[in-house]
Image (cartoon, rainbow, N blue to C red):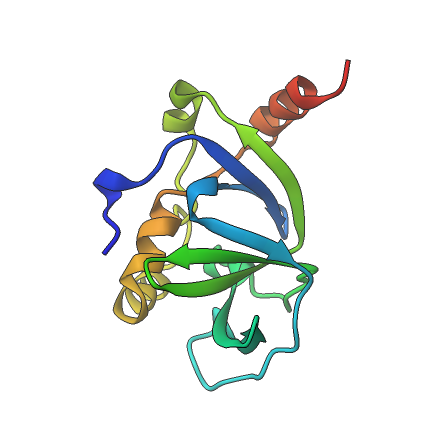
Length: 156
């Protein structure tokens, strides 16, 4: 099982989820893709359903719902996360690229689930502890930091 102590630090996949910018540790990202058909399930509000990805039924989690958004998902991309022997697809609006965020800056960024409701975090922990560890290792990227990262990555 993954643990916060072994959470990788290094390059991050930057995504946009509703009005937020998110940094997911690249070590957990298997691939990104267009959304596949999703079969709805009766499940927590943050689980959109199951999708067959590369022949394997894979749960699809709405990142916006995890962050507290109440509007309908507007996902245009899936980020396939590797969780030990399993996979989970995280539905996001945009994949913005891979960036290395300096460790000192990363430590100052708010955790991804900072504003998630207690019931969401509890349900997530009960359903999938490994996913919870990955999301705890992920961060929200304030727009001021995003602007700095974007400028540093721009071609010269």
